Length: 443
Ligand code: C2E
Ligand code: CA
Ligand code: CA
Image: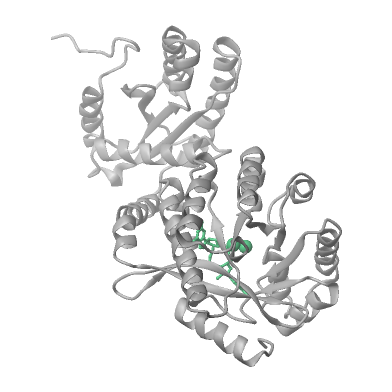
């Protein structure tokens, strides 16, 4: 019976590909097999913009090129849409990394050719490669393809690299990602997330002037997972929006309760993930919270990282203006950790600059002493903020020397372990009460 092929590309069907590859792996000898899994980024956009005919032509050209990978081709198939997988024997003349570089070079060539002949705009390919050797003979074809596909997904997320070689650690990373993203909603509902508060201190009298809300995830077995470990994953899945809303609500409730109990209260800042910019439901959500909790707007502030402004300045501006319309202050977080910080300041109506802790971290590596050059940079940023009438805050203050230096140059607010680590709400309430009762400085 004649073999059934994919009509558009003339390639094998995926099932046939897997059968052929399984047989090949079984009889494998002193050579390796490379599985190269590629797709065209935003292919749907190309179909929608240029029409299916152009999309099909481009796909056929893409396949012709991919088939030129090597003359030791074992089999090739279209998995679906624009996802093409090729298996080829790998000669000993290439190391795994050299093969990756070779495919990378071919991708560049192909991107150029497709752009010149079929489209007026840029086009990207994402490729994942898994390489199996004689020792991996127990691996079945489907798993080898799924490994290459996993590497392709990572390639797709990368800005600069379009070609990634699979390694087993990726599986661990994915397992962790799945564990985190699949347990997030139940973790919120089970009360596993808590809001911690880190005090902010007024430099001129070392008194409490505010706090930053930072989320903590405590698993039922008592272990903590810190934000840097789980936020990148839940940003990817979009679930960060729910978590941020949870934090905002907790903070509004905390402030409202204290006001209603006639207890002293300070402004609390919350963090805004970059994901909000593509959705913008955040403004309505915050307006609803103000409506529900009826707290004065000066008690909440929003921190947007410098990189959010850089990625999407127009949307960030809309967000800042929307928040200002509600009467709340906005700070630029992690200032100095990116590249074009200075340019941003002239165009954005922000209220507070938070100097990134990297400025002071360098000092920790230098026996707690700030180097002259770093001192100059910090003092220039603080001076510039003053001239622009923007409040300056330095985070990551860990030593009395650092704090004294910030006082010397007139940095208005400080935050860091020297004053307090982020602490649970109950402890922060004690902190506020003790502070307002004694009327003394924090340190
Ligand atoms: P960030 O906004 O820059 O927060 C400051 C981080 O520095 C916090 O880490 C804080 O614990 C840490 N830190 C404070 N003082 C010191 C110090 O003196 N020395 C050192 N070495 N570190 C200090 P954390 O809580 O682990 O948070 C990490 C990041 O995760 C935050 O960086 C923020 O970007 C993000 N994040 C935390 N909570 C939330 C949240 O509720 N929503 C969103 N979207 N992001 C959050
Ligand atoms: Ca922050
Ligand atoms: Ca920060």
